[in-house]
Image (cartoon, rainbow, N blue to C red; front, side, top):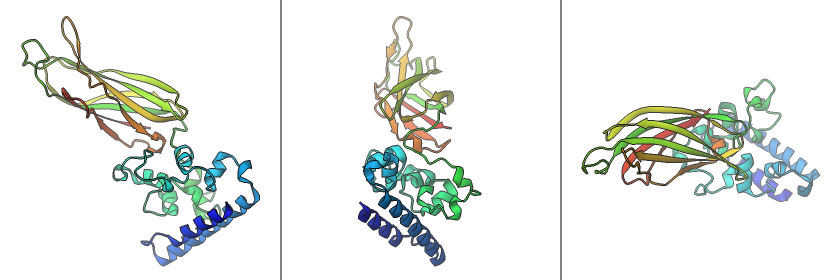
Length: 278
């Protein structure tokens, strides 16, 4: 497998970012070459069968999609059309750096965002003991620490008539959400927001109705299921679309990076919300 690593190193050196100055490019090439030399030396002295999966990902011995999802390595080899991330146009530069699809160099991502630092030579100043990036924890597809979610309902509009008696009046919607936290192994926990909005004879609303929720460690996917119920004196009518909306690989989200969602399958109302982790 060392020949694969050699070809990978050669490719990395030959494809340095074209927008850098010649001196910056030369310095980065030297750093990448040194890192690759260290990698090849390590790989030569260790059989892949004796390596941990983490090390196999690091030295390009294991399945790229698994390494990307679980350790944040080899993400640049996963197709941009795969489920490991959505359109890169909506991503922050920090997330692009973590996924390996940033147009900036590894050194830049390490210095300014604390990402991709494992690809920078250990002898480089970017990984020196005085560097702030040396203490940054490399992101994984799942959360490596428990976090908080700030969930905010922002918009509601009734788009069909006849919710109340008489056939034309506005309804009395009560809006809440159930949120599922799914770990890498499939273990699932859930939490409810409680009623975020309750209206009486009103068809439109915009504003902020918030709830803070604890998100467990190891969460990889977050699924949001909205509930819209029209309150009546005798029988409440469930107007919910019945659909849930998922975001995967939430470990790559930066703290306070907003995720905007809507109940796009709903036909009786329009509903929008957003959330972020910290």
